[in-house]
Image (cartoon, rainbow, N blue to C red; front, top):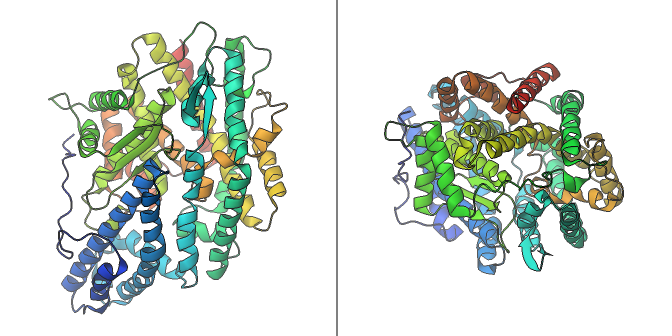
Length: 580
């Protein structure tokens, strides 16, 4: 695998090497240059595109660092103010210039002389951005950019006490694996009670976000934010009707497997009824899986896992080198702590190339899954970095999640670096395959809820809670006994970061899981061929359509119930084989 993670920061030709984004006055001359520059030939246009791309990369990376630093320390007011300054004072002034430059590109007579297959998706996005731009939305979008981050600020303060010690909610979740059922219930209730303390603040925040999002859609000529957002996200290759079919397919072909998983769990635990605090538990006498002790060890073991997956003659690999490079650059923040925003992400950095991984590890198997998941995103960032324009690197979110979710499955064959004995390794794989299946109902729940939220923007908070509970019931296994927990469940949607920060980004996980299972099928038959397909697709960045990117990976872009059913049966067969 002849690839190198030793990427260099993109050299600057348009902006000074020492230029940094501090205020609009410093940035505006570069936008004016691009706006006023004469384009008299195809060569002029290509240089203009390179300069615009360089400016875009510098601005993007600056904005990303402001967000990264703020999520790493939500209690630092200076970091929050730096992020807010960009969103309120710089970004709104960039948008009208971006629209002018987009129109200049589309109207340029030399644009038709560009390599049309290479530029097809790029120009399609430019035209889409022109279609969506409205001056009236600039202040609304600035406010939304700031408000959305308040979810992390509110959630970052949530702590609970267990056995006399204070934990973040992510850290406390490890007690839900404890053999002591009383302790599990106690911690489950403490976590949910703590969330309920902020239910009004989160409800108020979401109501404000929903109202502003709806107004953005109305200003742009759409009936609702859902229809606007589908266009904004570039969902050119599937529709809301496809999402509805996906929801039904999950009920038909996934829920029966989920029910089997929970029946088996109930039997293993020797319980008459399976309660929510039992779902992650192990039978008495079996200790929960603890694959690492701290962030440093998680990094080391993941690098070893990646090296083994695609080892070169020196025992190292491109995959492992990506993480080594990020570690050397200080681009990893892995452990949970007070004041840190919840969740996990890989943030591509358009100019320097090596992305940043953020997560909240607490020593569980889920953290291994998150780390290899974000590692897959990171590999995608490295592979796409060599593309000529920043816009070429803006790949569809669905293929981005194929990159990450495939790595969860590829890596399983090399998880012995995390587990000392075969029994633990088998348990880890079983849990991962269960997670592959049980993810789908949650994806369907969150996606279906979002369709309702934005189709009914004038709903009350009471209606919101009722509708959430109705949809949740559709995708909750009847094997799990939830009696007496309605108040916790009514506000369960508030724990999902995406609803607040990246609306309508969730069906991607379902689509991508289908792609990841397909790549894993390939990997089980021929690992080298599967990894070649994986890399071939990721290197294309966003230069092809979503179905073409799936095709490059040797996959079908297919959301039909029949396709979903076939993939589910494959996962079930693999899980059954673990037990024999």
